[in-house]
Image 1 (tube, helix red, strand yellow):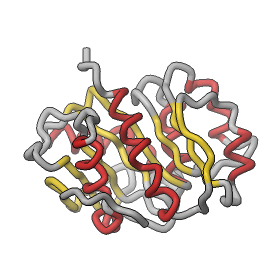
Image 2: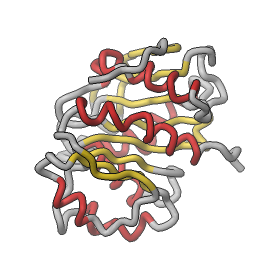
Image 3: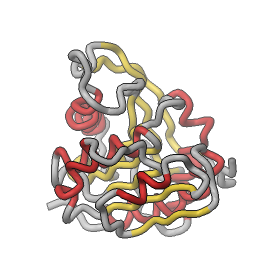
Length: 226
């Protein structure tokens, strides 16, 4: 995995109670270096995959990727994510990580002074599918979605809701050595950006496309909220 030679800014991992999930969760935020506590910056919601959690995000270098993107000219924004466990960002037996992402994470961000009128979403694997599903379930909630190797299956709820993504730019990436490649290619989505290159279903591949995804997402955040 390649991480940029850039410092992380204000990077925090806090515990918050999620009423949607009925439990305490880790709440992660990262602000690009040089932007203080991030007050006034828009937000990218981060939906994790099955093998990583917010506690792993600093080691993955997410804050450093963010600073690097801004130094390369991206509109500054904040990363924010919380623990969704392995529920694939869908409701299950009263535990609703999707509602947490839709209602609670933005509220926690607003309390920190971030601009939650400007939101995007990014996820990988089951989080990539979750980000697409979040955007299609609540059209207009986010300005753009970046999905890395989303864990989708033809006929599932992501396929069924793809038509509701009209008007929401989608960046879609997947490695050509990923077992999910055929299903990802079958998604009835016309991506605004993305592509298929050498790589497997892991951060060795995903780390190579984070810079392009962050640039794409920042573009959607350029215009002020109305």
